[in-house]
Length: 597
Ligand code: B12
Image (cartoon, rainbow, N blue to C red; front, side, top):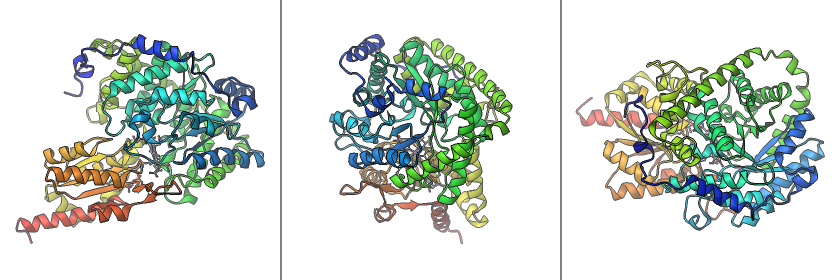
């Protein structure tokens, strides 16, 4: 299919029959008769029916709200975090408004399907009652975000979250990009998500449907106007078609202060609900904790000024400086919050030093571009034969077309064949520029002889990820591409059998795998099994976050498994350079095999 070829229903929704959206929504609404928002210390202590009401009150008070992210594998440790972080901040006379709770990857499967499925590093709640065991620990708003919506367990997890008194639900962004390992039934995922959205929308109190843009399409758009357009499309689905309320979160990838401030402004225009939180610029974090304080201060200052000058309801999120190395400990979360609270005090008059005019002008371009994107997507889908008034078809259609094609086909920027996705962005997303710069540095560091040898060796790499994290893969591709290595793209969130198939059919000389979810060792073992079954013997380079929670762990924290990966026959790569050294040797061997010197 050519990049600019129009969409066709037969290619996107080929099923002769799809579930009936009206019936699915009716099922969700019916469930609202028995599943209601349960009591919680947060709702009681603040005398509110939901977090939206609380946020509106805090905005009126001129407060800057704070968000902390928690979710350890064990419920006991997560409960301790829930109570202790609040208590320690209160003892310092500082506030904490909300907790974002990181459920584990495996929680996305329906309970009966969970045993035997890959587990990540997050919180596992075995019983629906466990959700309330957590939220009862402190008068802080609970937001069950990841792996609630957009998974086969969407309805189950949404019902349990509501019953535990949570009134900010899910992460709709995940629906569009996340894939559960060994799960290909996106029709069921969509049906469960739609029922869950209808259940939330039918509650007698306002439920804030949350969507983290960086978990969704925005992570892979080159144009921030497309990210804003994705917001408008999600508002159309949740507000216009389902009757719910949606708030958006941004921030992971927003390193440029102007883009960060402008995006907050653009989001606020036309928003009918307050924002949930603004995420920390975690991609800026490096291994050195002291250096990370500079990144923390720089993004928090932008977010504080943003909320002071145009309160949009987003709670700011001080991410602990250890986040790039490990899941932050309770002490580290408290430290980050002490830092942020003090910064809020110190930043009091700073807003007056900032001229927000340029950000407002950029916001205008984002909104205009976003609206163009939304209208073009809707027109394109309608032309393809997709019913854009049907939330099921909208959700599944967008998910299946994917960010890349949407940007190529409907991006608001002018056509420019020399630019990625064939368009000049209205407002450039900085993520890819940073990855290209990073790749250029790696390439510049390789000595000429090794570079020449690799280029001459005519190598082919099969490249994939085990999960949604794909920046490591993009970096690897940029570097290998710069060295003249042929690439076989096995995609993202790729199951081991699919990876082995692609490596075999593409004639790969090696596999370059990027992994982050704490599944490195289990994945490698399965991959080796699949390779063996196909008689495939290739070097496997594996990089990213090489850790895993041991099955017999009593700390429930992940440990480094690099040595085990090496013992199992892979090359564990802390750095791109680790792979390049091997490639130079492979190239030299190949050259010798051909009779070279
Ligand atoms: C960006 C990010 C995301 C983005 C990813 C966007 C995208 N489309 O790629 C989003 C927001 C979607 C995301 C989601 C999640 N994330 Co995340 N994420 C990160 C973050 C901030 C950066 C990772 C990254 O891409 N870095 C950029 C790359 C280029 O740099 P690097 O990682 O330093 O890589 C170097 C080397 O490792 C090497 N390399 C990498 N891959 C490879 C491959 C080969 C072959 C070679 C040779 C080298 C190599 O190259 C780089 C340069 O040297 C990290 C924290 C951090 N700061 O590291 C967390 C982190 C990886 N995420 C984490 C988690 C838990 C998640 C979620 C599960 C959270 C949740 N509950 O929803 C989900 C994933 C869900 C899923 N279905 O998979 C955890 C993992 C915990 C662990 N394993 O211990 C981390 C460490 C954060 C933390 N401390 O808790 N995340």
